[in-house]
Image (cartoon, rainbow, N blue to C red; front, side, top):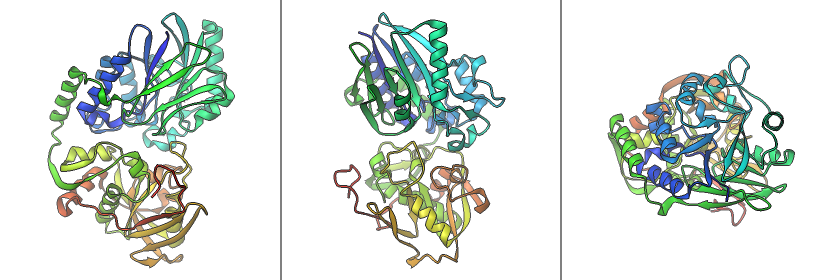
Length: 464
């Protein structure tokens, strides 16, 4: 039986060494002589350990799980192209990438061993692999701005043609994808057996145009076992909760965390503060309010705004909350900026919390959290019903200050109204702002009716 073991978007799983070791244990339990272990991006970053080690902690995970192949997610570029090239050169895996181009327009990382396609024999079955990355990565991640990304379908077709010409027709053809919503387009355009996906932080296991499309979620929620035998590929999702932790990895990660010296207690939490995907993308939530309040406090702004996609998921905060916990929530070395907006622009920004142009989320996810503002959204009418600041309706002709992540001034996808021309100030790095705010005000956010979503579809996991 030819099988693949697939993981993706494990991101800050390493900030909880027990959880990371359990994930590795699950992968090892599923592995065998008839399997190949593969990743599909956002495996090296973001997270506390990633920030400290510049992503190189993944080398230990690759070794522990005997991972054979990986491709690039948008977060692989968090520390810039050169550190990634060094990591690729030292990694025990082969990186497969058909559509990432370097600063000169050539294929990224070729001298370090990156290939557009590869073949592996898995229990006697010859399997061809192509790797693809979201072409919006250079706008999603400022550190990837010097690079360019080819249109995925065209790049995949070329890579597959080269594979067949050079190596012959494989028994099975698999795409390692970090395209998110682009997987469906890929399935419609290509004749492949399976697309192992990532980027969107929700699980998936279905067929599109008779092609198997899977995603394992985020932070090691599941490991996917793909069976390549039979008339078409099939998949089983395994949760690692019952797996035995791989103790050597756990010890290594614990030592790295201890060396980082980030155990300062910033505050204490009586009622656990959840930060699952359903919470941060479901509307108003305590952790979102905490971040938005901290951002607004840093600049004494009229409004604070946190993008939900910037809040990394993980275990709930309860009891002592350390600086490492805050970094794990927002592990990006970007400042909190102050922008000046007209009332009309501010209303547009608040409207974009519900309907951004993103391909890394589900269509019904909520994408923002606010401080000193109230938003009422009608999901059925797709309309902003009410928007106030400080309890007063927004004056379209007035001016307002808003504190938010610098990232949103770079990205064209989440809040396109926000641009560099609006920038008027800059505070400290985001997690330092959270720490300063927590030291002064504690960590006890409440649900206050800042965001009301009306007519939400019944049965949706985020339904009120």
